[in-house]
Length: 126
Ligand SMILES: [Zn+2]
Image 1 (cartoon, rainbow, N blue to C red):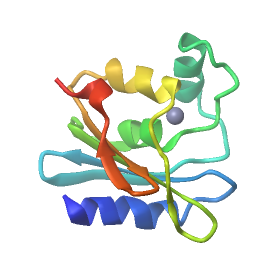
Image 2 (cartoon, protein in one colour):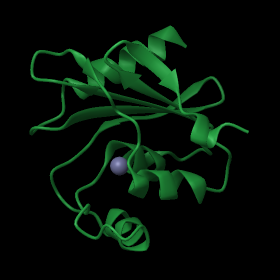
Image 3 (cartoon, helix red, strand yellow):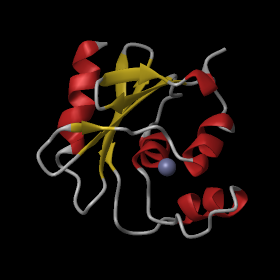
Image 4 (cartoon, rainbow, N blue to C red):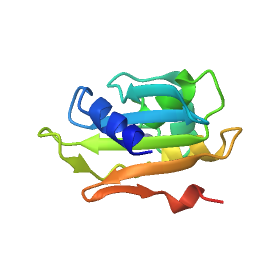
């Protein structure tokens, strides 16, 4: 697991813009996607954002991007956010991503960064 936490953190450093978020999606033991958030909007992101009542959150979040990019069914998401210096910051999924994760056709275990390391998101644990 540690190497995937590391991988998500590294990916976050590649993100452009102010919010630097990276996300690793796993399907079983395999890497299914490793992406950053994007500045540009995406129709699927907007669709979830409208359903969540937050239509302004239309730029593609890393969690939703990872789910869209994965060819295989995802069972784990690891989300990391870093500041300009590469320090880990809180990356608890927002309500829009929460909706996307909840309505995904598989149970997903979610880990997100905090300033003190990674935590499991209890909202999605069974
Ligand atoms: Zn989000």
